Length: 321
Image (cartoon, rainbow, N blue to C red; front, side, top):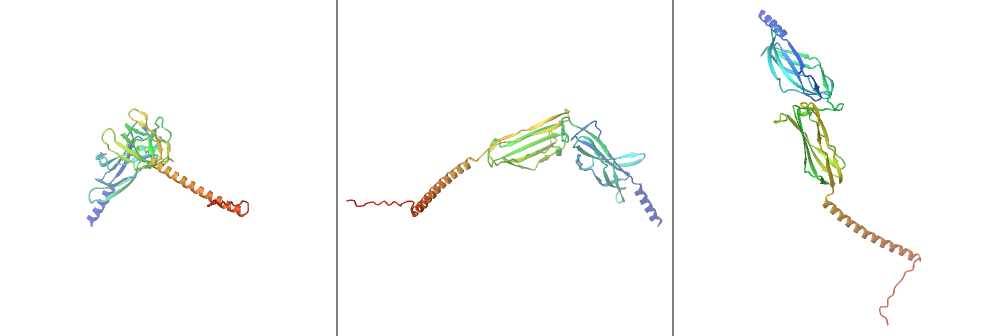
């Protein structure tokens, strides 16, 4: 009996002795801009031998975009005041969406800790401290405007076929590819075109890529199909994309050019319509003449019947002497 009591006391003591904590810090930098990557370091620590079921409640909102890591960045054992702590490091990436004072509210963090396999677990539900970050406004950016921050950026514009004259019903394919270095693909600005009276726009699903080889890390491809539907001269208005060159420390513009189009009728359809119109004109003219003759005959008989007009009879002498 005494052994059972001793075991229970030992178990209670070992469970009570397990301690845990969290810390959240921002990678120090003198100045951050809109859309610039901020590294948020989250550490989960315990005096136990192992940690499981960790959950970090950090999500995107209207103030910033959060990119969570697929796994922890590292695990280490440190000693503090003679006590050994197991520390798991996570690195979250935060991209601010506006300038000014940006606050990251307290983050709810939970995990389980135990002294090893088969040992009871102790559950921790902790909360980090709030963090305040000052986000600088990029010169030239409008209030509330998001600006991509990158070390390098490129814009590629493709149109197939490269024709400025279209027949109603013709289609052209438009592709706009953006690439950036030291940025995230979800930050590349979506391109939007709207249909008009002259053409219909059909957007396709954008293609986002990351971990590219070469000079760029990420890319975004926006693709559209344009269908001409009405004759006339029209222009598909281009776009101006604004970004901040981190290395040169200045703003730059990239232009998606206008597309000027002349939309005409299908020549064969126009020819067939002309033939059909001529045929209808001849038919209607013939019908009109018949109607006029019929009306004249009816009107003449009415006049004769009422004695207004005398009927004239022509008698031919077939046998003259």
